[in-house]
Image (tube, rainbow, N blue to C red; front, top):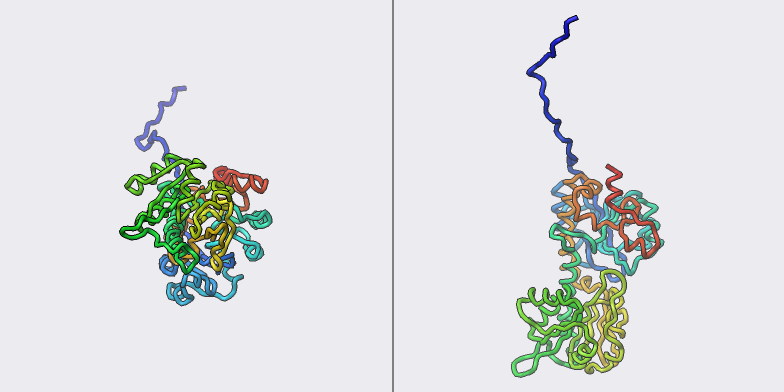
Length: 404
């Protein structure tokens, strides 16, 4: 039997098949809730009326609790005109799948949280409570923290903005309490012609230290900056565009400078945990009468041994004849500016979340955003939090890969 010849057809193509790529889904419509904050001294709001207007114009719905923006001097009418729905019931706001908060989740919020809800808020590691974290895990919450939100440049935009506000505010506060009417020395911060300038010591050369230094120099003060990170001191000088007096944290040099200064700013902090105490009570006792300590690191315990937590209502106390200003969350005292800074980061983020098809999709495509998650569908994805409470840590990359 004759062998069949192979059939050759011009319609056959011997080419590799196209690779199937991960296609972005259609944009998701977001239902956003903004509750009124009940946390201690929290005046900020996560989204301003202008930002709400942009979100509503893009087809999203925003539900705002009555008087949610009052601490930042935004009225219900401002939000209503921007297209938000104003509700009197706290429970109704918490029914939204996505919550925007300027304060961390507290015990009073737990019963109101919904299953599989997404929350974007601050974390405040030092104030975290185990029972709150466990309840969030039970309700399969997905949570992002302001402190860890990264942008495309690799920086933390909200942390930087809040630090800029705190650093700038420090010198305004110092000038106020150096006045004779506030039991201060009665000196003008910066001084005038013919009179030696006021001496300011800044401990910590981070963003807060930089902006405190920048404002003190602008007022004409003499500034001396301490930090154990020499590269940070170099960066500070580069950012300021001028050489200033700097030193590593050598106790004798620090003590000598504190003895003769009018203003001492504590702006040191660890990435996690308590701030290091670098000024002992014995050193504070040698400082000039009527001088002022502003311990910005009080949020993490403070870096002066004499520091004690105060409030915006009673911001100062006097110890060893030295005024101590130890108010945590200084940006909340400048709530409108702080709210605008937060909103400038969150509004574009929410639009990106929508364009990507929701929070579960954007976490797959946006590598920088992954660092912001401390909980994903009830699993702890923040290593420090898991260590602190001895809870199981789950790598977020593995979690999202398993869901594809």
